Length: 213
Image (cartoon, rainbow, N blue to C red; front, side, top):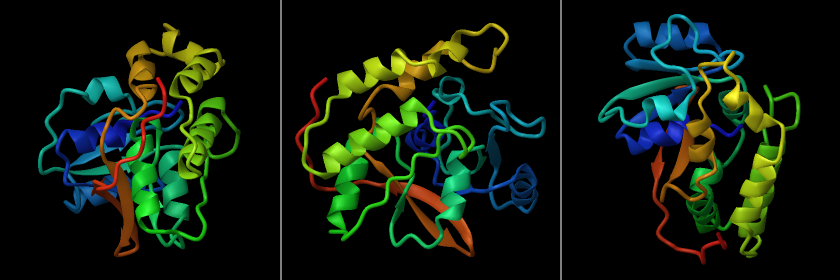
């Protein structure tokens, strides 16, 4: 599931997010006071020494103003860390689909690569593939169909685990947030600084026609 922790953190006022590959690197950066809060997951659960897991709803009311977040996840941050050769890099999801497309197009790129990380960057998942298709439609000037994307994801197998009592760290409300397409009017731009990917808000100026809902 395309959980959108970093977008919620940015909306909550965080100044930046440092994305890392390992738990150990995240903890070392917090110890070195590069950032104040470690967030993310390993196999869906927050590591014992982390301040937060990967649930959007659990942090949706937290005030992150001025804080630097250190994030490690099993799919998203792995892809970001590996993409150091990209000319322009964005952490995209459905909640920032339209502004991400606008930000990409503002750079008049010759080529755009959409990388759906799926399950641990190994197994394809419907929701990541559908997000990439929706982004491609918007990039190529088609309106897309946000409601159809939501229906297809809700009909898939991934949503069931958010209703599993054996997984109390997952919440049905996480799905509601993840499928709130274009919830935010900013993109998450990533630049490499001192060899590390650092994400900040980018607000594109040009608006596009909304996809039907």
